[in-house]
Amino acid sequence: MLKINDKAPEFCLPNQDDIEICLRDLKGKWIVLYFYPKDNTPGCTTEACEFTEAAPDFSELDAIIIGVSADSTQKHRNFIEKKDLGITLLSDEETTMMQEYGVWQQKKNFGKEYMGIVRTTFIIDPEGIVKTVFEKVRVKDHVAKVKEELQSLQKL
Image 1 (cartoon, rainbow, N blue to C red):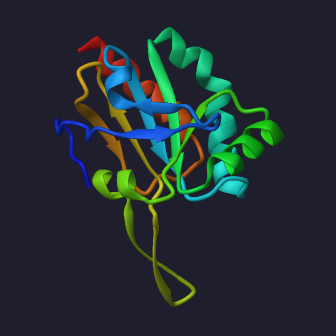
Image 2: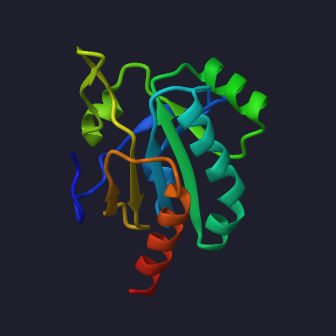
């Protein structure tokens, strides 16, 4: 797992519209990068809807919100249309980026072990440095906590 003050690993992944988004293209902006397990599941839907609702606040803080899962770009498009989301979702079907960020981990559910995405949010500064890591995120109140943290980081 990445730690505070680590350089964020470079990435280039397709978004919901099959347009490649790269970390290098986002230099100069704050990035709220959140990894989530699956489109159209209850927790992930709540998180995506709350980030969409708060997007104008993050915009005012010169921050872009990007969600990442292993779902296809087509699934992301359906999710965005169905839930009227206003955020960018990247598709990491090969899990390469998730492995580099350390969020592709062994999980346990009902006694079965498997590899999966651990819900994690990173705040990356305009220089590409990880400033905050929220591990094993609980969706309730998460977006508000991320916004508060971003505001306090920008005051430093």
